[in-house]
Length: 237
Image 1 (tube, one colour):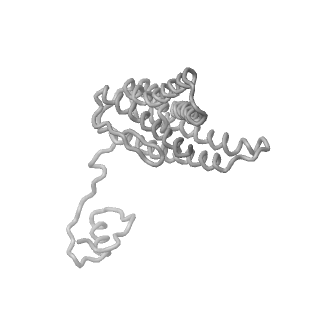
Image 2: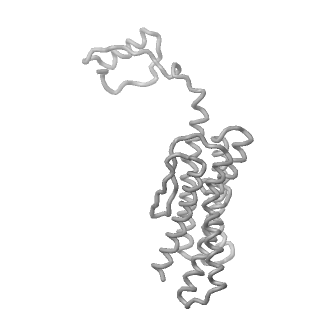
Image 3: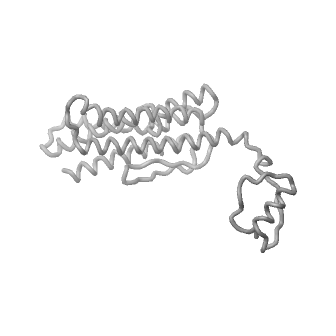
């Protein structure tokens, strides 16, 4: 039963990612392919310019596929007489898909539902990166909420939380926080990129002999009226 439940989860995750990939290909997104990992999986795309509406549909197709699977499983349970173990497995499959779909539909990155907030801010501001930052902060609130609900709340109620629940809750929250940190950093860099001028990053170069000393370099900089706020650790080549 344990192995069967693990296979059921793997199937739910695979169909979830297939839904992402098929929807992306329907919108002509390039190089849509699925990457499965021990933590589940994700769908990757090539470099291109997306639109808010298409991005939202691609993101929400995953949770929708899980809700469809849960509905199909429920219909089978209601209309077909199964044995004890098949019925338990199907019951687990239904609830696993409901949980996977509902959790991924939460409106904060890196969850699929985060694309909803991203698309709204993107449409309002015209900047996908501003939408990503806004959705990432919602995702961080969700991560904190996960830790509070599964770790702190049982203690406040005088209950003893289960170790597996605490470990899984903390792992999920840490994953979400790290993912949002990377997304925020990348988005801020892309927002500042248009303001960067190459000439502002340039400084005059000097040819030095191979046996030049640091003092020679500092003297050359002083002669050109440049301030030396750092030292060169070894002689220029």
